[in-house]
Amino acid sequence: MISYVLRRLGGALLLTVLVTLITFLLLSTSFDSVAASRLGNSATPEAVTAMKEQLGFDRPVLVQYFDWLSHVVRGDLGVSLFTSEPVDQAVSSRLSVTLSVITAALLCTAVASVALGVLAAWRGGVIDRVAQGASLVGFLIPSLLIAIVLVYVLAIKTSILPATGYTPLADDPGQWLKSITIPVIALSLHGMASLTSQIRGRMIDELRKDYVRTLRTRGIRTRSIVLRHALRNAAGPALTVLSMEFIAMFGGALIIEKVFALPGFGSYAFDSSLQGDIPVIMGVTLFAVLLVVGVNLIVDLLNGWLNPKARIH
Image 1: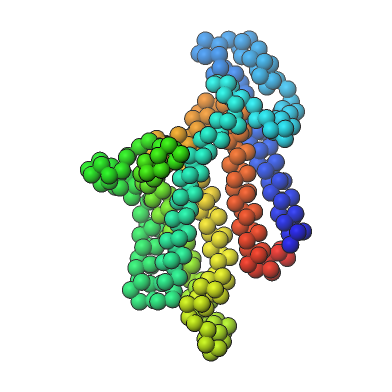
Image 2: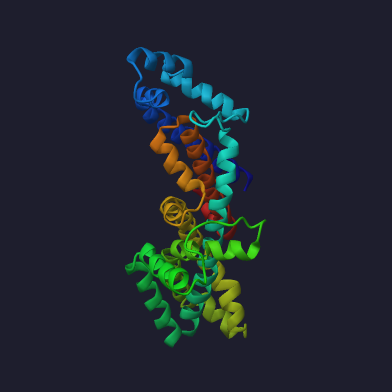
């Protein structure tokens, strides 16, 4: 198990370096425009050249990247070119908003999908038809469209929930819950449809296998067979789907945060990209890669724990 963990950590580290290197190489094509943006519309070519030298953009690209990487290793992500705000502090404060929304969305997705998927496979009948119908609706109707309808009904017509804005959890838990409810629904719907369908299918396959019949002949209660044996075997693929939904939600947060005026990671990344704020873009990329790699690593380790055969690959 230790060698399995070390292999995964090594792969995660290599992927992080590759993604940040490619991002920096792509950003290097915009050094001139970034220097010009700092000077304004009246910038002369000589002034732009001087600004590039001041920012260190005149050095070879790889030298600049490894200089950035060496500072990152020492915990220094630099400062914003336009606000002089430390990147690590700016990203951390906004990441907490995004993670609070995504964590709530993932929790809702996992709980609702497992409950509905297991009951659909176990009980069948009306519950199964409801689960399949709900999954179909989740696949067919864009989540953002449903969110707009919810905004109209719950925020504009009835004023039950706020249409925009964000209240930190530490300030007021009740208002925090209200402020994230519609964004969480918007982020969760597609994931619920996908995960419910996945769990239902896997549970049906597991409940038809020989070991289930053997357990029943031994007098093991059906509830125990479903929850302790079949669900554990079905959990591996479901975890993979859930990790993919996390990545999709992370990308979807960019749109959701702009629509609902949430001061999160996605809207910060969007605004920084428009400005060409290279230190911020690199910091945002690094945090995003570490999050995605970290979640995939946790899922791999859980899969390795649930299924020892997975450690071989």
